[in-house]
Amino acid sequence: MSSTTPEAPAADRAYQHVKAGLLDGSYPDGELLSEGEVAGALQMSRTPVREAFLRLQTEGFLRLYPKRGALVVPVTAPEARAVVEARLALESFAIDKLAMQGQDAMTAVGDELAAHPACDTAELSDAGMHEADRAFHATLVAAAGNSVVADLYNALRDKQMRITATARTHTARPRITHQHAQLAAALRDGDADLAKARLREHLLGTVRAFGIAGGPYLDPDSEL
Image: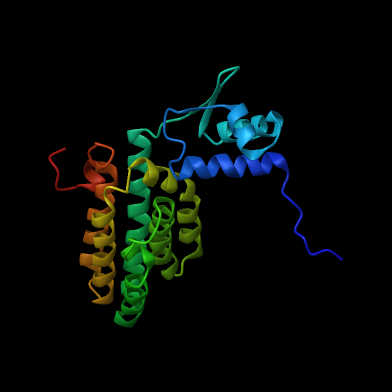
């Protein structure tokens, strides 16, 4: 009996290929994708690519224009701010929950995060950095032990990855890794208030990368 894993249907392969490019920034906002070019790259007909484009349009990533292609829908400022606000709420809850579990719990998570690749991304590609950043924060949320909150956070995964790529984190890599390390250190020291302050500063930098203000929730000290 052969142990070879059956190849996924062509439409699924086209969907995964295009979506990966959308999430890692290979297909930037405003780019017009061609069915023919994607089909050629994947060595398949246009029909499964068209199916993939339709699926991605339903998910809000693409906007189809008959006989022209598929436009990569830009991430808007309100969308970016809304996703980051949700992240702040969920991750702040995780920090509070850890604090309730005591110093040992916070120190253990702080030590784990300090050793995470997101605290030293020098050897990672841009796509690897995006994934490491997401995994770092997901680890923090999971450590709180609330499966509902963890599921809510994971549901934001695609939007987080897209926003991270759009925010051009390559140029901000030193700042991001430093802030990850600061957050991990605050947790290791058992200082929940400092950890939440570090988290807020870190997430505020994400929305500012779009050239937009954080708003009263992300930046309560602003004059807005």
